[in-house]
Length: 92
Image 1 (cartoon, helix red, strand yellow):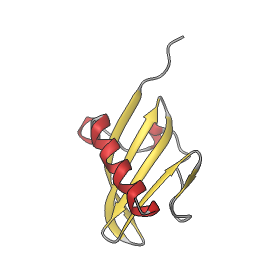
Image 2: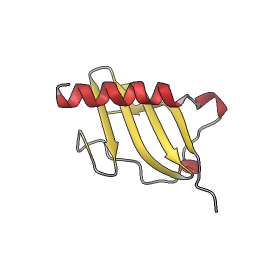
Image 3: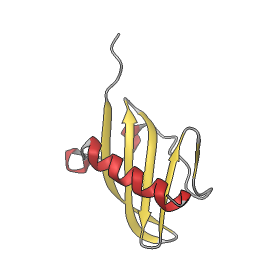
Image 4: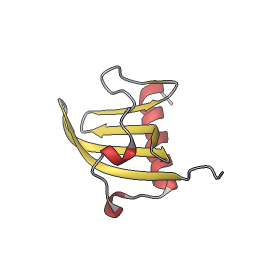
């Protein structure tokens, strides 16, 4: 049995903070890491926790989100967003 492949997406989002983007890393249907970027806030979440209690790791399957091929990004694009989010919330 093969391991599901990792997929990466960037999708428009809206929160109490306004409009922004959500970056998603998924393995099969399971979202394993995500970054949310709004004008004044960048957050991260994974199975170990999150940087902001208001922005939890999505628990819906990937297919629940309205994503298409236009939303796909590369692993390096996701990693850049992840690194930025971690640096913004841990001071480096």
